[in-house]
Length: 114
Image (cartoon, rainbow, N blue to C red; front, side, top):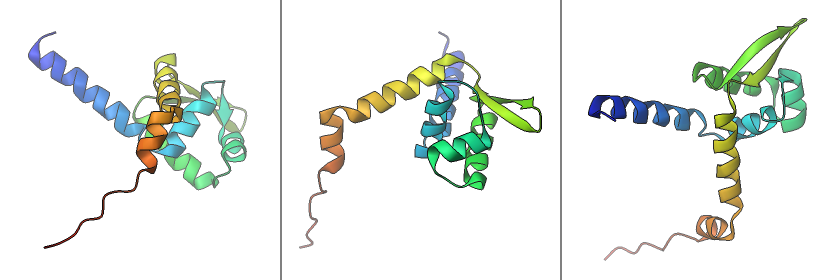
């Protein structure tokens, strides 16, 4: 890959990862990996307020991760492609590994001043 093309690709990958950098957005992508959902269905399954779900869907839509299609009076959201579902599933799987859990639960060393 050429230098400029590689940089743009890495920049786009960074943008995608920033869009996913929220537990609620990870949960939304996980839900959408199993099929289309309307906002109220996501609210029910995630147990968070509707405005919060809508705000996170807006971020995901802006990043090109999800799309909405009108379904009567509602909008059904789905993943644009399966790549993101795999990325999120791998991240969740990694977070469940004993070593990853151990690293998150270690207390930071106490800092002493001289």
